[in-house]
Length: 190
Image (cartoon, rainbow, N blue to C red; front, side):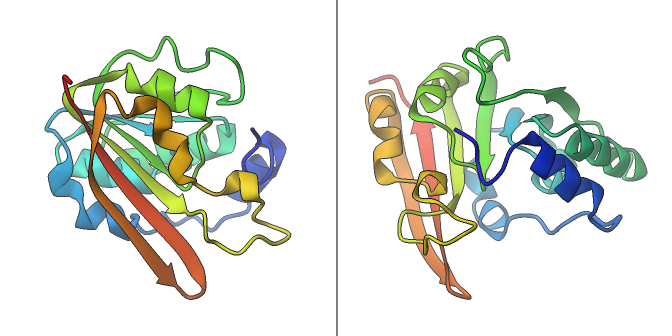
């Protein structure tokens, strides 16, 4: 599932951005207390606005993205801030792309709609008591030339993980005409 453009689109997007790190996702800042101490996998990490925030707050972060330009920017920002983030270029559209990533205490998926298959796969890479944090454009966001229905996070995206995760918090926010959702799941031993 291509999310709002492919690799070429995102490489060009990141290459043309100013040399400034974007702001951390507000929902992440507001909900960091739900994270288990330890490791974080930042899926579709972009140039690291959230990965670097988490690293600065004591987490050991691995960021994955398919844009080489995004990952180059992340490494540059990390170096300037004297922080370390492990990075891997991963095409989330490729079958089995998440299977060899290892296990993490937390997984963050921000402003990216991961396929149901990959959500199920990623759930096996989270430790017991770990957190799955998903935030982005939700199911009631206006569909237009930029945002397609398939780009919007749907409540049904998480059906396959209900038996091993508890939904601990769900929020909806309408900000400047944009509909955002945040899901916070905790892995349980049901």
